[in-house]
Image 1 (cartoon, rainbow, N blue to C red):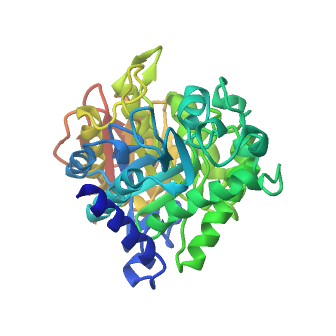
Image 2 (cartoon, one colour):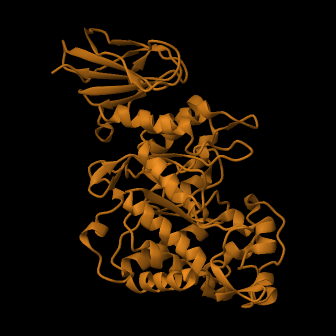
Image 3 (tube, one colour):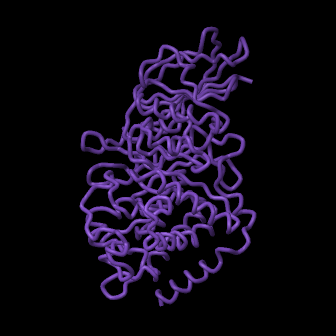
Length: 464
């Protein structure tokens, strides 16, 4: 019964993809016209906050419970890599012991569409990574990947130019699977199956208004690879009456690495920027890199996303470090931030109690401060030491100052009318509690001293 239902569901959704687009679909996720550093989702400016236990969440049996947990704490974005593993389905069907690239595996695609549907019902945005880089190297490639000529019935190693064995790390980018493009190796034998896979993928995603498109995960491939697929996807979407948004995720941790410029400096190819690998940086260095990107795109603003916020430090998991990076992304003016999955090596915290508290805390703060009308203004903080505090300003009206671990600064509200009275509220981000508001007049600045150690946010407003 399940197999017949799965096949019927796939057929219905595939056939329906080119139906006329409804108004609600056309108004899904897009850069917010009034401030394109942020996203608009279903008609409202939206800050994307998230976390989950897995990255290929459609392959995780309990993904609906994960979505419910996320939504309950105020989260609204997940990551989904189109990946597989020895214990999880691959996208193609088998013909005996090998795969047939002309036939798809219903179980893989039914899982995917179930995730898209469940996320859409809950108003959760899904950032997908089409080419799951680590599936194309090492043991995953050699033993399991259907595109490997040793694992399919459709082409040989000689015909495809693909190696039956690959023992290297993705950073070497030595698998010619990523060189099939017409202006590269022009490998039509493999490219037609790659395009067939992407067409199948799009037959589902284009039915939903909550999908963002990343070409790869931590790629070191030639820039032509991501640019080709970004163009291919946007062309196919346009033919179906849709507008979609694409990015690439590069491997280097340093955002000043020239590879990142392929995304940062090319809005004609990439509609938003994912800078997840910056989340290996800490403190002021982490924030300075974010400021560099935001300034570099200031002439053509686009959303800056972080689909992975890491927790690892010195080969162990440090939840507080992850939360520091998570908050720091928001105070640097990023459009999204999501906690990376937990691993046995401590890479992330997923949606554990620390992650849920961080998401709730940000929702509390921005329930009282309009982040979409603000911009980072750390230069307004005087007597500030390195990594002590960060500032968002609604010019002349309100300021949100974030302290990663206590401290005190002098806020310069230079855009406020002379003689203004200020109202100050303190939010304890570790315990999710507000302190009573108080008022003060300030001539040379507004002194802000945290009530204690730990993570704090000060909200400062001009009294009406």
